Length: 71
Image: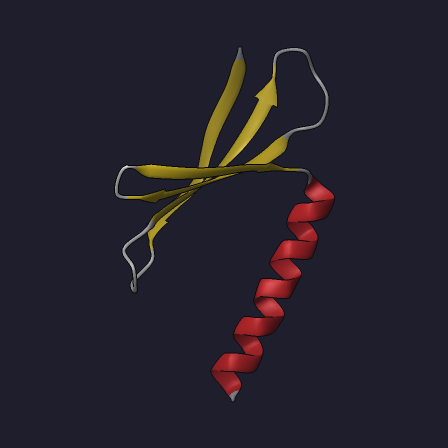
């Protein structure tokens, strides 16, 4: 059994996808993972990623956002 705690949940303004970020801890132990759940009507896309991957993904998104908003 895994323990799941919601971190954030929001809708994308264009496309109306629902995105939820969750922390997942497995009963067997190991590192906590970040679960990214994207819901598009009845279809779900789910990624479980480690902290190093989460940091790289976040940095890339932040850099893109800053360039685009300031441009």
